[in-house]
Length: 149
Length: 320
Image 1 (cartoon, chains in turn green, brown):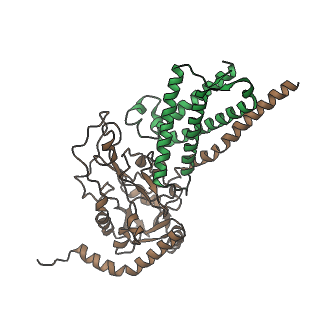
Image 2 (spheres, each protein chain N blue to C red; image 1 turned 90 degrees about the vertical axis):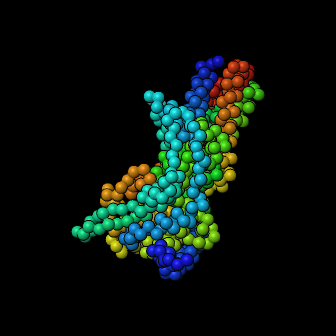
Image 3 (tube, chains in turn blue, brown; image 1 turned 135 degrees about the vertical axis):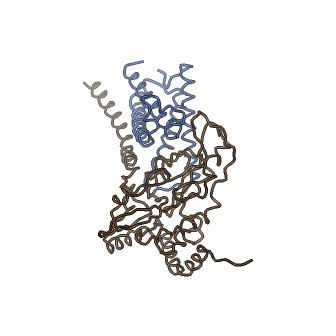
């Protein structure tokens, strides 16, 4: 793995970690399960803080995804091939960005979605996140990579 | 059986007759607002309120069918320390907001023109223009209707109380032992259902006005399209040299109060606490999120520009 690939990898891990933490922080669970009582983790129970952080890390994920997409189209295509793992994770991240983007739009003033649409978006965003996490654990154990030379 | 006339039934009869003209006018205005796709707002003239609590009783009567009917004993909740909230044995409490009381009268003794006066203020959900309770509910249990009403669907709510935490006035109130959480993981997730004023959304759908407005003998409240209500609020404030609350609070609400004394003065003397909302100035809770949402639009362009710059730099190196 080159230095450049290593930087991208750790940047991606940091983004996904904070997105997961702040995403789960949208549910009132960190206070109930006293995780927010652990010194240094009190912010996890502050809904407005986790909400803003989720938006910031989502912006970073979008920027990174678009960067890697065009990087692959312009340069990477000649050197490497996207694996099935890469495609599966890519589709899940795209799904998370679309459902998340629709929820961000919903949160703007004057935008009204029907209750059923809100519930579907909330649940699909959560299910996609859980699936990506479990699939990432599986690919980590099996040492499967996003791309191959 | 000897017929009896209670104070309430007497007031009800006279109010119904006396308010019929005002009611039909309010209804017409509200309907016009709906047709124009505008949010409907209410204006409360604090100087008119006599604290008779007719609105409180009317609210309780009309909304009784929406109140929780909890199953007891409550399921044991984990971890230990997660507290059940039970108001089912205190349904007659009317001096604060509870799951069984969505409107109450707040009192303030203030000095007006050198004279001590008692003011009474009907308090309930403010129905924010951009309600954080709705926008930040993780399950879509809280919804905002086209007419600006925000309400909590008791069939979907899990009672996590996030809506209460993010509400600048901490309005929604929880009852344990009721709702969907009982069918999922009652010991590990959820804690009942959150309740608050839904501004009689079902009555408005049928062409009726909210019970609190209909029952008021002093015509404290007016209902209509927000633009028109705001205009009226300005006129009223000007006529009494008074002040407006709700125009800009939390980015604007569909409940506007007009008072003869400044709201910070009122806020300093009213009783505040659990189920007793303040009257302080409130900044827009959703403002940071909305600004970050706009910034989010830049993210894909930043990514594309980054990739293009890398491509250009590699090409330039190859050309050299």
